[in-house]
Structure formats: structure tokens, C-alpha cells
Image 1: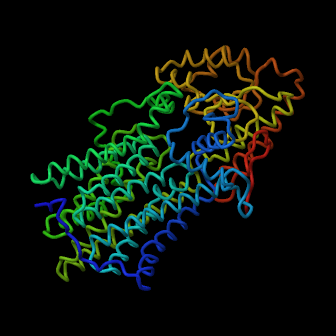
Image 2 (image 1 turned 180 degrees about the vertical axis):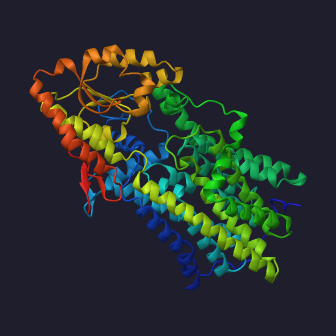
Image 3 (image 1 turned 30 degrees about the horizontal axis):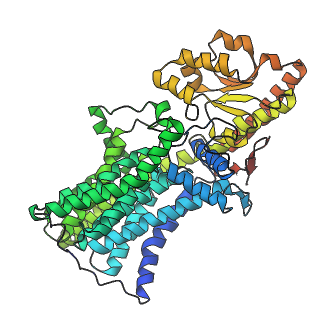
Length: 574
């Protein structure tokens, strides 16, 4: 039977020592995995995904006093879904750490988000160590378990790449890991129903929910943990503690929700409107299964077997593992309900990799510790084989992503921001609007007002996408907005039908077409000199294209400081 939540299951390790060994075990436990994560993140060079640039642009506007707008003077739209990550960037900008220049010759737009991500990664491993100290006997053994779990998750390309992307993934992973550590520590010390853990979990859940919309699921982590360990004689205290935790969660989250409604008139961010996230179907429950081959079938099978063996074996570790499975299960549930992500490499799975690695290594330690000598040898051999097989797959995945990462911010800054700025200089178009489906790097670099064809930062276009009304979208863009420049490519061209609309050919002329469905257009009435159009076309072909290709080579290249009006946003390190 699972241990009652108000009965201590501790101690199995000595109280934290103030001697020299305690810092040394922490250094081993946290330092080794953090170094491994830093090396893995460095594999992807200066790459940042373009969607991160949207948050960067809002942070710039807010820090400059222009308000919650993509560009100064634009209409207020909640084009972000990660307010806590946005707040961190605004604070960093306010103290001169972000969007102010360079560190050692590298743009702080690149280095600060990656440094913050690495710090969050170290925090995740520190949370691992808090858990391991409660579950595993012996200070050094707990440090070894932490180091193995932390290094294991650092080796997963999906985890390291999306931590390095500039998006909010590292902060969400830290929030989920901190909730897990708080729950395990509270159960180990018989304080699960105490006010401290209730308040801490409520605040951490609010952080997670304000980091990404699916983080809302962690609001029930504490109540579910109480339910898992519920006893009849503790029902009253459990109900009171759950209520306190939910109340603490509701204050910051509800406050932000009230601000959203008052400012934008929406209950959800504009990004959710554009993506038309609906209620999940029953078949969505199968979605987490797609992560199994990514981790490795043998590795997952061994981890599941070890977990089952550990839970079947009586001991103080059982309630601790049981409560650790609560945030892990919620992370899986969040992954299941989200729409599949086009960016690839399992972008929404970051908390799953972190908590899954911790659960797997703790379970393996507990199961192997109870096995015979022969059983340990067999389990160790199988574990090595599983790790080798998974590592080979991860290495190939990392190499592939390194050579072709998802929509590099710098490539967009070069291609959709700096290049049209140069076209405008050549054609004599000093201001106006540019319509494009990639707006992060564009907003940071373009002198033109950005019209988001995806709708993430445009309320009218978001509604057209939500309604599936592409004819209405074309009417809005071509008749009402009439942007000076249009950039279209690939799926977005086919989805919107812009190039097939006869008004486009009537009102716009190509500057340069990379392919039949991709290229740059300028409004026909702005071309007063055919020689200038030819010059702009030559520039696009001979300068823009090579720069965009170089900007996509993430390990070698990166963005400069990215200021509006720039005609060259690329820096290359050989």
C-alpha cells in the first residue's frame, strides 16, 4: 500500500553536510550533466528558430516603452504565448544583457537566450539531485544517479536542440522539474499537506502555465499527488491543501488572464486563435507513443520494466516514485492534447524527456539494487546495449538537424528583413508594409510594417485562419492592406492561394522568384523605372540568395544586432 502523505518516509541519507564533501557531490551531480548539455547545445551553433524572434521583437517594444506590439506603432496584439519567458527577456533588456549589442563579438540576441537556457538546464539537474537525495541512499550514490539522469537527457537531440532554440522550452522544463522535486521532498518528509509545498507547487504551476499554454496542466499536479497518496484520515487536510495550492495558482494566472481580456478582448492568446487549437480526439491519446522510437524501443522497454519492478518492491521509495510519476504523466497528457507541431524534433516533449530520464534512472537504480549478482550483470549488459543503440540514433538525428535546422531566425532576418530593405533602397520605397509568413527575424530587421500571413501577430488574419476562410484572407491582404512587398513560399503560398489570385498578377510584379511558388513581389505601381527593378532582381539573385544559404548554416553563422533598416543581418565565423 502507498505510504500516507503525512507520514515521513525519510531519512535514508544523512542531513546535508556543511563540510567539503557536500559541494563536491553537488558539483559532480549538476556540473557534469550541465557541461554535457552545453556541448550538445554548442553543436547547433548560433541557430535560433524564427518563432523565437517574435518574442524577441515584443520584448524590444515593451522594453522601449512602445507597449505589447510587434513593432513600434503597430496595433497591440498578443502574438506571444509565453509571457514568463517574454518577461525574462524584457528584464534582461532592461539591465543591458539582451538586445543591446554583442558579447565577445557575438550578438546578445543569440547568447543571452542560450545562456538562460543553459542555466535552466542546470536548474533541471539540480531538481534531479533534490529528488535523488530523497530516493537513493548515500550522498555519492545519489550524485551518481543524478549525473547519469542529467547526462542522459542532455544527450537527447529533441531536448538539447529546443533548449537552444530561443523559445521558452527551458523555462517550462525547469518548472516541471521543480514541481517534481517539491512533491518528492514533501512526501519524503511527511509534509505533503503542509502549506509550504502547497504554495510552492501553486506558484510553480503558475510559472509553467504562463510559460506555455500546455503548462496549465501542472496546476493539478499537487491535487493529483494528494489524491494518489490519500488516506481516509487525511481527507480534510488534503482538501484544504489542494484548495490553497489552486488559490495560489489562480492569483498570478488569473491576474494575467484578466489583463489579457482587458487589453485584447480575448480569453486566449491570438496565437491560439490563429492555430485553431480545438478539443483533442480520443485518438490523440496515442500521440505520446510516437516518442518511444525516438527514445529507443529497447531503452524504453528496459525503463518500463525497471519501473514496474521498483514499484512492486516494498520500500520507502514506492510513494516517492509514485508521486514523481504525477508530473511525468501530466507532461505526457499535455503532449497528447496539443496539435502536432510542424517544426519537428518533438518540440513539445521537452518536459517529458527531463522527467522521463529521471524516472528511468531512479527506477533502474532501485530495481538493480534488489537484483542478484547475475541479474545485475544481465541488466547492466542490456542497459549498455540499449544506450548504444539509442545513442547511435540520437547522433544521426543531431547531425541531420545541425545541417538543416528548423527555420533559422537569421535566415529570415536576411531574407525577409534585410533583403526587402535593400530592394526598397534600390526601388525608392522608403516605408510601407511587407506581407510574409515568417515574422520573427523580419520584425527585428525590417523597416516596413510586418503583415503576418500566418496570423500569429495579426488579429484579422488569425480569424481568417481559424475560420478556414482563405478567400477572406486574400481580400483582406490584397484589397485592404495592399502591402508594398509580399514574400511567399512553399506551403503558405499554396494554403493562402495568393499567387493563384488574379489580383496578385495584376497588382504585383516579381522582384525575384526562387521557384514557381516562392519569391519576392513588389507592388506594380511602385516600379517607376524598369532598370531599378532589374537591379533589385540582380541583387536578390547574387546577394540575397547566397546570404540566406549562409544564414541557414547555423554552426558557422549567426545574426548581428538586428536593427530595423539593416541591409545585411549576417555574420559568419569560419
